[in-house]
Image (cartoon, rainbow, N blue to C red; front, side, top):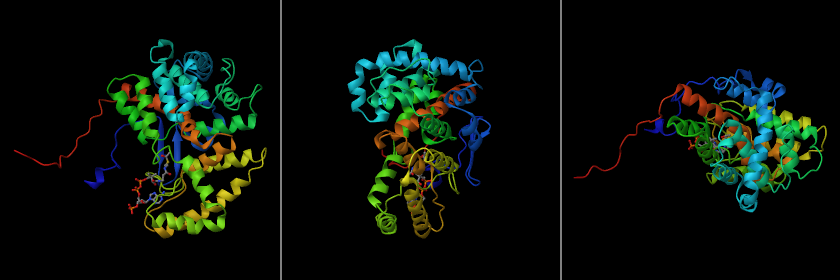
Length: 356
Ligand code: ACO
């Protein structure tokens, strides 16, 4: 029974989208090792890579152009609901954005739903400035979120782009599996994304990076780290940003995001980076002592928290930013499921009473 609890080791799909090698700590997305992908592909180009197996007519230029037009359409549709969208958590705001545009056929395809998420996110962040349909979508999103009248700093745009590309796909994680289950029923793309957003919200999946910063605040100085962590572990708490279902070594995304932060620190003073890296080492040592038989290494969320904080995002929005990256993968998986899969319908073992 226990073996089935988290479906570990169960193969539920064949995919050409990404491969997670948990033993070697390698991630391949659409054929590219993560470390190379982030150097060569921006947001629209990553979308094209992931979507082209199912939508060969779409290239990066068409996606970028389409996102510009559709972000503006979504913005106009959502603007009247700005105060409601602003009042919600980032993930709930994205889901509401999808619902509020459900009657707009021009926003129902892959470009339309991604554009809807981008505009809903900007509104959730309090932006008052409409998208520029001719601008590169991520540079323009950052301009909107930072309330700028001129273009966002290119170093920040590069940092955000690298983050979004890094998290664009990752095998059959919980939110992607959710998207595929919904797609397998022949439901629409918007429903797949809405379900995936719900799965991403939990702290065991996408909800960890905000609490990572809370933890670093609570620890304070590196000297307090050991006693703080040990008290948490003794109380049965999990340490956010550490451990992974698949990786038995360090999550490769942690290294890519740390390197991105180091590049950003050439433009901006980031004393918190060194401080956090010192605390990370204390946490890793404590986790090794606490669970000597289980590898609990740094996962993507630890450096996500530091990077998104350095880019100026509020910690309450971190999971929303994650969703903007992962949504590229959700769309691809929904298409792949419908092109190659069947209705997903596992069995359960009845352990309840038998009466009568
Ligand atoms: N801190 C302390 N103990 C941990 C941690 C952690 N971060 N992660 C796992 N453990 C312990 C568990 O308590 C468990 O102990 P037990 O056997 O005594 O019950 C043992 O290690 C094995 O844990 P599992 O639950 O089997 O690990 P699983 O593969 O299910 O969990 C998960 C993976 C959910 C990521 C887990 O490591 C965790 O909760 N981490 C903290 C939250 C986090 O960082 N989430 C983001 C993950 S990355 C992503 O989804 C994008």
